[in-house]
Length: 211
Ligand code: ADP
Ligand code: MG
Ligand code: MG
Image (cartoon, rainbow, N blue to C red; front, side, top):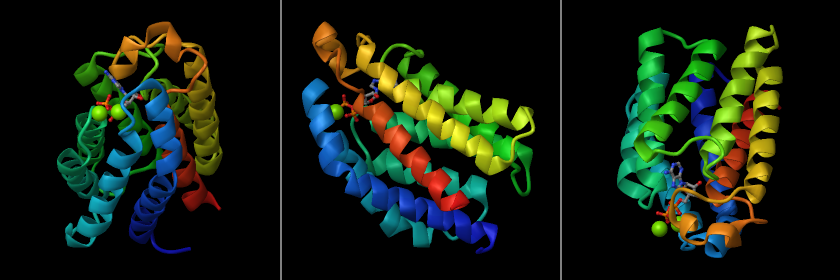
């Protein structure tokens, strides 16, 4: 396969393509429980990343995540904008601290700490029916699988499964954070769009790296 630095570029491109392709689905989901802008926001973010990525001028993973954070902070908007910006910024800091070529464990810690930063900024916890219901189980599954000696792709596949399961579980949760909290019980039965978006991009990361 291509060298690792090219892999990161490919993963980013595939994630952008997938989020743009999912725009109608995410829009419909956010229309049902929110204000309907998530699909458009993520598409705007993906377009900005495609435009700006070639100008990042670095192939260092931490620096790339930092640059992605800046792009999304400007382009994404909504609630997702600052949350994704802080997720990527914290993940970048973890990779920086690890130094050099990050290992799968470093990436797992970056995801877990990124999720923690989202929780700190937005005040939501697992069970509040947000993107954290996909992110946190995915990060836990990734770390547990690696701790248990799984190969990186086996661990990623476990993370994708956990994200999918967590996303599906949001349909039974009463929203306590974000716009859909205004809907209360009326959101029950529908999947949280922000969690769905996480499941989509994580699945693409796994597919791009491992297939
Ligand atoms: P907005 O409500 O501002 O239009 P977006 O459409 O950008 O927000 O994103 C909606 C998603 O953001 C929700 O589906 C949920 O997953 C996530 N979200 C909302 N509030 C929070 C929060 N406090 N913490 C984490 N995620 C949140
Ligand atoms: Mg919205
Ligand atoms: Mg909005």
